[in-house]
Length: 156
Image 1 (tube, helix red, strand yellow):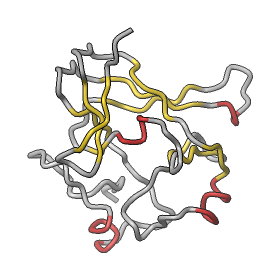
Image 2 (cartoon, rainbow, N blue to C red):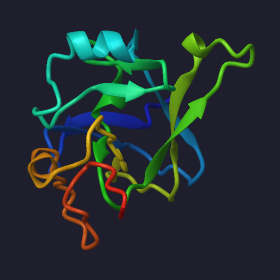
Image 3 (cartoon, helix red, strand yellow):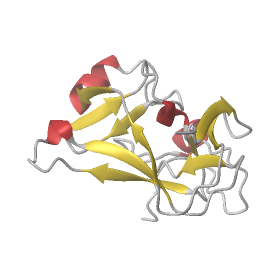
Image 4 (cartoon, rainbow, N blue to C red):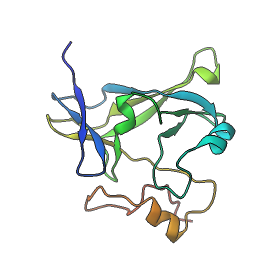
């Protein structure tokens, strides 16, 4: 089976994931992998922290997350965009074992060869996003509707 995706340098930020062939909308294209941790464990061991503007942590549910910091998973290189062409989907374990929940990425638009695959991170911090934190977690997508930050910022 031919490879559909490639990790390489990105104009958005650092590394990115790019399409090597056309991909139709609504196709599952990647699974986020990493070490299963509780949110509490991650707070104690997160190498980057809230002030870094960088993370490989992906929340599964209110108890667990996946830490891809040391993972070889290519899905960890999906960059943020305010106009994403992919979305994350929670795949809940049928037996309701929340430790076995998974995250998959699915296209929400048709993808052309060479397109960078992006998500809206919508990062939620344990505190209200301040101007300082919004700047630390600034968005570099360059889209005309850019929010300026990767943080989820409710209007309230």
